[in-house]
Length: 375
Image 1 (cartoon, helix red, strand yellow):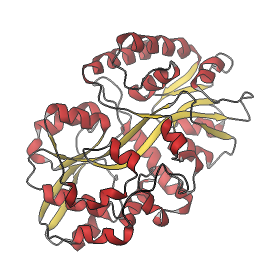
Image 2: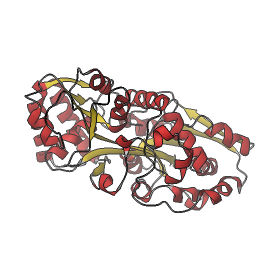
Image 3: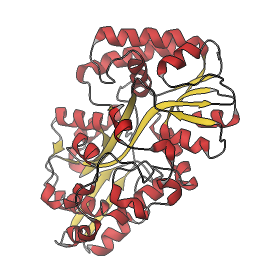
């Protein structure tokens, strides 16, 4: 779930999910032709992983509404009589509240959706259950870059923060965050930034040459100064409809998510996506298990099934998300698989840094965000 990792930040995860659902309806996603490395394993042998052992029980997963393939659960339950998947979409699943909710109601959940920051918080809180990977052999189909980064659970989706701009309205070429800060005064009132703390602060940190996950007070203070300096030229700080402004021409330059730019490009060919030369802040999320759950076997069996190429393609086609498993490509809608804005290749991934848990530094991120929003 893409939401703030700080307690005081706005709840913009649902808005991001709405972007993705709209993208799915238009068939937008990750291209087939560019991957960091070939995934291990093959789809021909993956089917036996989920059917090899009988499992029974009900696995309850904290998830966002609609964030599952249309047929994933029903197909699994048809294959495993007596095994059930219950998706709990009630209550807050913002990153700042997810771990607190899971800890308070630990016995109620088998697993949860979360990004690397949530996983880190869960480990620190002592509520994450290690998985038996021999029960999830299809994890070998996940691209190694994502599998290695999301090593405590089953990776499901990925996205990055970059720049979208109108080539017919902005006369200069934009290739970097430095270009955005430099050109903002010229296009004052036509620039939009993301209303999500880690994504926005992380992009400012990249602009300054720092890590998205810095815990340095000095570097975070510099990021605050950079954000405050550009704020007078911002039209808005938005958690939704960023790409709509690009498509309409009311926004010339935007800090935006790759999939939202991809969606906007469908209605306006003058929109260009830019992976900034300084690098991009990115999220990587998936599903992890809760410590001491008695339904671990059901969880492991289901997510092994989830990673079978046809099943994982159902997840991608339903949600419109960028995907992390090459072997699913033949079953992904062509309009999703061929979209250039969401390309994953060695050059792209070399310029991407995933947001992670920053420990006690969360308090300073909250402070930076509050000061920027109130400036």
